Amino acid sequence: MGLFGKIVIGLLPIMPKFIVGWVAKRYVAGKTLDYAINTMITLGNKEGCCFTIDVLGEEISSLDEANFFLNEYVRVIDAIVEHQIDANISIKPTAFGLLIDEEKGKEKINKLLSKASENNIFVRLDMEDHRVTQSTIDIILDMHKKGFNNIGIVLQARLHRTMNDIQNICDNLGTKSDFRICKGIYLEPEDIAFTDYHDINNAFSESLHLMLKNGAYCGIATHDKPVINDSLKQIEEFGMGPITPDPRNNSGPIREGKGPGYEFQMLLGVRGELRRQLLKQGHKVRVYVPYGEKWYEYSRRRLRENPDIAWHITKALLMPWSNRR
Ligand code: FDA
Image (cartoon, rainbow, N blue to C red; front, side, top):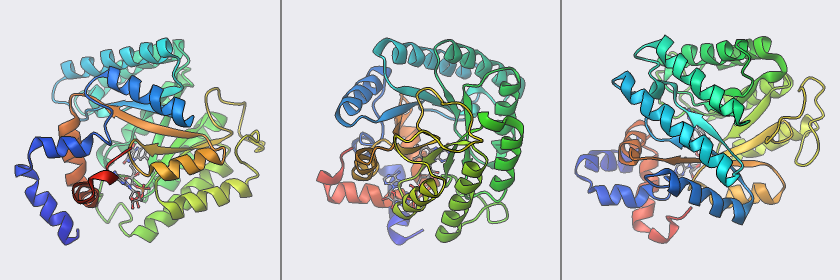
């Protein structure tokens, strides 16, 4: 962690909530679903991007809290349908109780999947820290076995196990494999994860290649220019591209609401100019839109987990005009 990061982290406990809030407003749609809907309608009309919605909150301490997330996501699905927004949902399994009672957590996810499936909406399981990597993978495999095809997973390039996980999921799900590949936000220990920037980028590239080779659908989630350039090169090498139908003969039928075998994904408020550039080139770009009462905890946790974000906070404070979506 750089000196800047250390200072900002040190100041966190005494940092006034309004400062954290002022910075967070760029990255979080607002406290309620209405804010998320307005953000998506405005951005969608302006730029033509699509969305995935995240209700803020992670590990819970009682199963009652899981009911809140289930009910809130049901409201999200109804709102997507009512406003005809090009959006799907991203959920955190621990918010459904995965670490309290795995079976009960799965039951709740199952209920949400049924609701999403009735409305033709895709559900992405976000990937949390290494304690739940395997159980999160098990959930998607189980749900596919139960006949739900509207579910996909996130894998983190930084984890050593990821290449095996990709192959295992592709062997099990075949043309229904649907991934988001990202670097991984959790700073995992060295014995299970790459920690060097270049090693993580190489692992990202290899992961994407293995997914594309297996015919899987790939959500490429990054704001890192070299990683985006490498991904564009790989897409071209596979004969894929914007507007062109997916030419891979192992990729299965066209996926409704998705790109031609791939899409780019970015967080709300991060690197808007890069997002617009990709959209202009015709690529499908999905924006991850978090909202909820837990915005403060979310922002503080993200900061503690990945102190590099301290730089973005410092920049926003020193150059307030740069703090826009
Ligand atoms: P990198 O960290 O190298 O950042 C490249 C550049 O992007 C930075 O220099 C900076 O300019 C900008 N940038 C990146 N993050 C920023 C931020 N928060 N604020 C401002 N600028 C920022 N992780 C995970 O473990 N599980 C998950 O389920 C997901 N899901 C997910 C969905 C989507 C749509 C995205 C884009 C990302 C995730 N992530 C995630 C987070 C991901 O693993 C990773 O931590 C961040 O995307 C940052 O990595 P980059 O690839 O952007 O590169």
